[in-house]
Length: 322
Image (cartoon, rainbow, N blue to C red; front, side):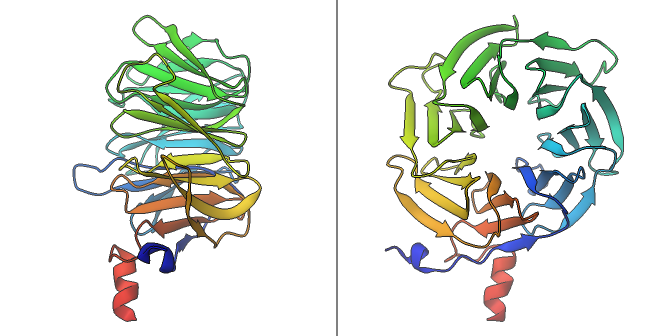
């Protein structure tokens, strides 16, 4: 057993939500060397926090239904949220002001920004992808309807002009946005519940039933046996995030209140961390890999230190106090 496994991981608990937390995302490291955390919740009130400490910064008020998806722009100056009130909203993170609201015909389950922050993409129970131009918010969106089930996750590649989407039809689809054409389709092993893209854009990971899948994109956007790795996990997994090093990943489960860390190559369980009082709906790593977050049915977000043998953020203060 390693020293890290022997050291108890003490999480920081972020309260404030009143219903289950169903989505969260850390921002990239911003130009002022900070990062932030946004959360979506069934209480309809997405929240912005300091990513390192979990301190509450503000709540975006305006949705009239559960917020299923919440994402930050690269510099964290804008937020986008998708809701059960049939809308996607864009927010100013400095003032909390609603900048745009885009109506849909059904529940919006997935949202994200383009890398340059000028567009958003949405997906949901209409089974359609929509791309809205924030410079021309009144213009009709670009649409695509390749999915045959609810779209639950969308990821825009940071350098290639392609979009990844997944959902209940169990297919991860890759779309070339220059021609709005699907260029690859990967069977995910079951309905896709979550999908994240590494910050460098070299790997995508997803969860489907009891599968944790990884796709290396270094050799291109055509999935092959050499670029796909899929682990069968001992229980169903609802959410996944890959450590920036690529060496380990964290998962949450709808049937388990424990946060688990696994070796990315072998799927050997490295850590089991207890603290939540309900199933885990969302997980994510900070851009420096020092912190990971979990959002739960119990209505809380918990921040965990990746390496509890190190001093970092508020964990430094706790150790000094001891």
